[in-house]
Amino acid sequence: MSGMVKYFWTEAVDDGTRIGLTTEGQDELGSIKFAKLPTVGDTVKQGENLLSVEADKAVSDIPSPVSGRVTVVNPALATDFDALNGQDTAAAWFVDVQED
Image (cartoon, rainbow, N blue to C red; front, side, top):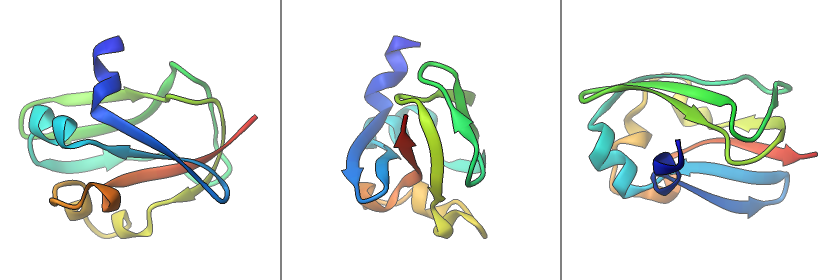
């Protein structure tokens, strides 16, 4: 599980911590076809499953880097997952979590 850490970036945003996918994560997983994301209001715990992705190379469960409550899910992922596969890693984010 510790190996997954380099696949994700976190940054402070107004409503908590934003969790996104790094270029290394993109390279390792390949093109993401589907992501099963939490919904707003869900509680997540650090080290427990945050989301699952189905990609070219693997189906992966992604552990949460933080504990708290999901406040925002990336609206760009409502229709497709192209944002996770693009060059702009700032756009390749999953959720914001308000930490406990």
